[in-house]
Length: 349
Image (cartoon, rainbow, N blue to C red; front, side, top):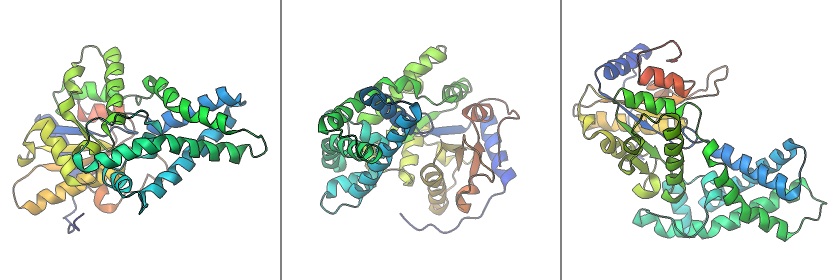
């Protein structure tokens, strides 16, 4: 990643003014993250793991099953990090580094079809599918042995947990669309705001999330043309691109797929909407800096920070990212601010 020089800071009120002006003029573009923004990925893993363990091991009370699920996830994270540093599994490590495949995604992989993947990452993707089942076995083994060291639970139980997990994970999918996210998309669609999607991950695990969102959205808001809003052309995934957020090229490609060459228009504002300052916030900052360095006239790129769990003090961001950030404490607040006339529940700081 190039070391960009510091760009002049912009005042908080100027951020809000630019965003409002572009929205009012119909020159706003919104690119949405998926994991933990539209889709509660980690919750899906832990709830599926707890449900499966409670059933197979006959665990009561519920908090004990959740404890086991948390241990399962933590150990899987540790193994995933070891893979990323591996000198023996070079193609796998490269995939995890370049495409930023997360633990929740790996745990849910099943089968031998990794779908459309960038040619440079296909070997690593194939290897990842091979190792996903082993990751589940190791993580369950650690979780069960650490919580029940004297229970004498053998390998057949571990195998049942490992084999059953992807299936249980899929059963929970329809409940994992983030509350209010469909309201945000509907509001943007009603105002004819171009919408795109940018997520780190492989097609084989990310595409079903889009389809689940589409199915849920069609039930909640049947008046919207969801086939168009969630069409394949506006779904950008790191596994397909061969690079991942926060690389600025990923966001540029997402914007071009959703709205063509609008970045050349100084009246345009692009909002990268997501929950992760290190990925979503940084990619917005990196693209804006890259546009500044080009020396050509260009639009504005901002980070729409979806932060549903505000704490006091507010979650601190890198100062350079903070200066280009609009905070939203709910998807409905973002819908009110980005897709409809401004209301009091849209929080801008």
